[in-house]
Image (cartoon, rainbow, N blue to C red; front, side):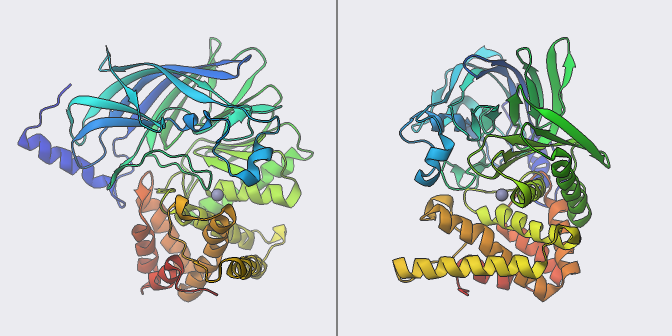
Length: 480
Ligand SMILES: [Zn+2]
């Protein structure tokens, strides 16, 4: 392992970093996870062992590496990562706790000291020598994930066990250094770089896995490879029925256990993937799995896989499938900082649902109806909040902890984004608006794009500063 950098290497390392900004090379180097996972039925635990080839993707030498341990947010049963409004739904059997226990860590094959961060949400590895930009470090790890009895991103219920945001994942070192990995109950508090995954999974008799990539059985072990994904998720069940259909080079799979018309749900996913392929650019992965499961919210996105709550029915179910499918473009392929700028992926995803309805009139929802519903919901929110708080803050570009309530977060991040994007699109025309999104998708694939990049793509497509319109919404200068 090389740690010393001569001048030539420094220049090469910097050049290697250039593609990491948006507009770069999708084939750029990424980190790689190799996990061997074993599920144990009685306690619903997932034990893992393997190595991570950690690439320094920053522009600075690093003296430490951090892994997010989001599962540790479930340790305190009195303070779970879900707001009071949703607590009873998330924990139908009462309080329960979960965690990830790190048994051992190696660096370069040698046993290494490690510590958890103060809040327990990150594994911190202090490096003896600096890891320079473009350099790699092999970190080995063994761990056990204990899910809570909770209908959450990780957790088990009567039909399924969800393993989302629970594998150790390299924390992203942004311009301001590392976040502290807090698992906010509002929003999706996760930011990670795209990486390659190689996963093997051992399951007890009778269990099936839905995963971020296809898993093929080899001598009793399920194996799969995923390329350029920013996370890896699994849902396990003994009850799954699988129905599937190809869309171009992608196999769309629908896993369910209590859907009266699974073919219809699959068709919605197929229609959504087909529509977004045409509108934004091709979905890049060989499989896309839509998974019915016990889940406190409507749905949740992961690369190559989405969770859909088994409480969703009919039109609500279909709209959740459309929304979560759009996240494959906005969050999955094009990443953004979901802690600081949640509107960037959620707002665009919600507006993509409107675009879907426009392209698929047989679903019976028009652009005008969708915008009118958003306007009504936003106006109601403003009225209620103004009565309670007097003056209200309708700025959208806030970090997750800066939203007062879930309602404020969802109204400003989802609903108001529909109004914002619709006004921008009205000003620049639909064709140019879609060209801007196509450019955003192709130039920022597998990156973590900042808001300025998204606005810049729309400005370039518009031929004028349409970003001025969006910034007024984001800053809260437009109220109505
Ligand atoms: Zn969403």
